[in-house]
Length: 500
Image 1: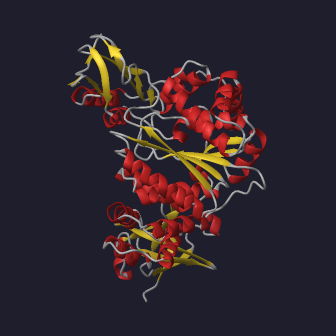
Image 2: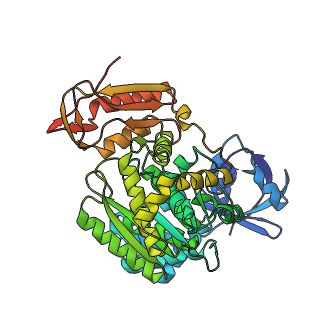
Image 3: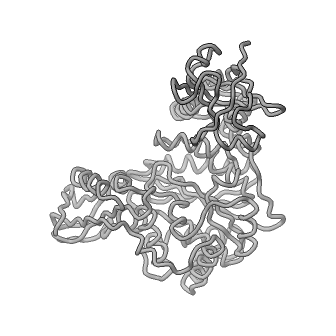
C-alpha cells in the first residue's frame, strides 16, 4: 500500500466531517481522489479523513489540516503519515438496502457505528437516507436502528424520578406547544428534561423558537444543573451527544427535505430513551398538508410508536390531531414566540392553548399527577408562566423580554379580495412563504396569520402579514404569496392583494 509523509499546514476552514487538503499531484501519486478516505498517523494518534484537492493552496509535500489539530500535538511542519483507507463496510450495507433487502441486526449496528465515527461521506449518508425513504424500514430494522442509535451516545440518569417527554412528528406550521406543555408539567412537580431539534423541513423547530428567549445549547452536565434547579429544560438535543447518529442523519435530511417514517420512529424514541424518559406523549397531526394525510395513516404510525416504546421499556400515548391548518397565528421563530407569550398571558391563540392543555393533561394522567383540568388550573393561575420564565432564566435568558420587538423590520400586509368563510389554509404554501422570508435562520422572519379556518371575512380584511429581516427575502416571499394562494374561501382561492 502506498504511503506518503506530508508536512502539516494549518488552514482556516470548518466542516461537518473531517477532511484534509492535498496538492493534486500528491493525491495522484498516492492514488486517491476527491472524497476518497485516507488514514492520518502521528505518533499514537490515528484518524480517518476525506480528501479535497488543490493546485495552489497546498504545495506538494504538504497537507492542509484544521487548526484544531494542535490538540493532538501537531505543529506547522509536523510530518504526518498518509495512507489510503479501505472502503467502510457500510457501503455494501447501504447498497443492500437500496436494492430493497432487509438489513440484519449486525449490519445496522455496523452502519450506525461507522456513521458515528464519521466514516461515511455526506453523499453516502444521503444515499442511505434516500434508500430508507424509498424502500422503508421493517419493524425489526426500526428496533435495531433505535437500539444502535441509543448505544452509541450518552444516556442521562435521573435516578428514581418520574421523567416524561413529548414529541410531535411535525408537518404543521406553528404548533409550538412544547414550551407551554413543559411549563405546565414542571409546575406540577413532574421532571421534564426536554430536548428538541431544529427545523428540518419547517420554518422553525422548537429549539429555533426557544432560542428567541434564551440559550438552547448546553452540555449534559449543564442540563442536569438546569433541571435540578427548575425541574425542566427546553434545549437543543444536538449539543448533548444523545443518540448523536440521529443528529448526523438529520443534517442530511435537512437539504433533502425528506423525513422517512422509519427514521422518524428511531429518531424520536432513541432521543426519548437517551434523555431518560419513561412516559412519552406523541402528537400525530393528520390532514391536508400534514405528514400523515389521513387518519388511517396516523393510527398506523401511532401503533408503531406504542410498539417501539414497549420494546424499550417505556410507555407511549399518542394523540391524533387535525393538522390541516397552522396551529397558532405565528409561523417562524419570533412569530411563534409571540404566540407562546400570549398563551401564558391568557390572550390565545385558542387552538394553541387547547392543544397544549390536552397534551399536558395526558402526561399528568400517565404519571397520576392530575389531568387536563389540573393543566388548565396551572396555566390560568400563572404558575405555568412563572415556571417558563424560571426555565428561561436558568438557560441564560431574560424573563419577560418583549419578543415583538424582534420581528423583522420589513413587512408586507395582505388583505382579502373577496368575502366569505375561510374553508382551508394551505399548510405547504404558508410554510414555504415563511421560509422564503428567511425563517428559521433569520429569527424575526415569518408569517403572522390574522384569520383561520372557519372565520368569516369581508373583502379588504387583513389575512396575514409577512415579516423579513432582509428586503430581498421579503420580495421573494411576497412574489410566492401572490402566485400561490394561502387561503381558500368557499371554493375560491383568495387572490390576496397588498393594500397601502
